[in-house]
Image 1: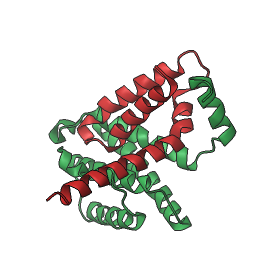
Image 2 (image 1 turned 90 degrees about the vertical axis):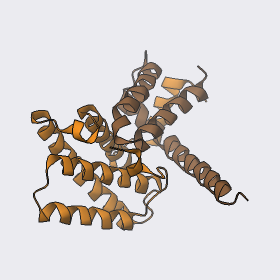
Image 3 (image 1 turned 180 degrees about the horizontal axis):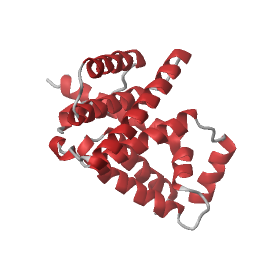
Length: 80
Length: 135
């Protein structure tokens, strides 16, 4: 998987884990951790280190998703 | 537990608002002897609120202190819950599992590390390059 796609997949699963219903937390944690483990395979980095390293990207990702959500809501509200 | 408690899930909540709700929760808990089920529901709601506030960042030193305080309270409450639930698991009453509680708690530890830990920019770049290759 290309670099950016791999990162995007981790960020998307991480976002779902942070914002999903409580009953879906373990499922999304499993999905994110599987992607993280796959990414660090064969490197000396730990899963925690990779998540810490990706944190600034994740913050931007959360803001982008929020903006996208607000735009969708605005479109719905302003639909004639 | 339904999706309704996490409606408008990505909308940031100001730290002031998060603090008011956290204090109300604390008062409710102090004024009665909450059951593990009540505690579990309140904890998940408080964590949701924390993550919404976190998404907006902490602009002032006061916000940062409030964030640090909320994190420490949520982590210690979560650890207490996990101990209780391992002895007497009531999670099915609110449609969650112990694994859901543990996953939520682990995310709080991650928040603590990324906000108040000390990974340098140089180390961050080194990890990303090692894992994904050069950008």
